[in-house]
Length: 366
Image (cartoon, rainbow, N blue to C red):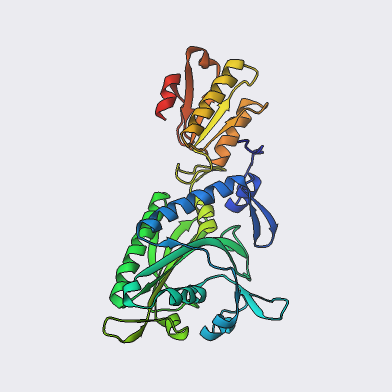
């Protein structure tokens, strides 16, 4: 994998500008960004952490439509109350459609077709895809933009007790997700806003630009099920409304937060879970056949073990290679230099002040 040529950056610069400067993202227009290779790898890593946690509590992955008929949104009233943030359009038959920023309506419609009896509950599912909101004030790079990646999950229950129990499970999953990503956070009671419901909590992280909500979980009760006729037959033969919860995490927002809180000056210092690359192999002199051969062998070995690694065999000065590795936040730098003649290489992390010399055979223990 080749890395970008990264220019040195001097002076104070915002995290979003730094991400663009280093080739993680590319701004297209206000609130719209392309995720380049480095950022896409971080986003994928975050998604993997989330999927692992949600799969472990029996939450099933699905994919809901991003373009939806306005009919269900009109039934719940949110077609009008959601405001100007909602993208609206018409198809060629003049049917009114919406491009979604959230999916409570469609999730409820899906659940009602699969749940007939109390024996079918609890049901929960999640998805990870892009959402769309016509933000009035797009700012902070990936923090507040018009198109963003988000995980949204929905759960359906027999009664309040079951909802409370699953809500606690999901709350703990969020705690595990953010902890695995190495983030410090607080959990705060929040206004339910347009989503609605009786209980909601925000997961908040402090960054250099202030406090930005990173996750939000809700107990919705029967707000949507009562309006969309999502019912089930209970053990007593009575037809009842399903009780519902919903849970969201902003993934691209998380990626920028990770970049912000893991900055060391104008360099990034991602941990091994979220970093674009865990290992960066830097060949000091590509004209040295031994250095290039050993560097390639180490690269092939680490790749065979499933590691995330790049090989920097560019014909540029060693200082630029090491600087670029610091800029993108590689967890471990492996330097292949003249001491390869004695079967040694050097390794360090960004936070380490000194290189550590290791025998070549120790590569198999990384």
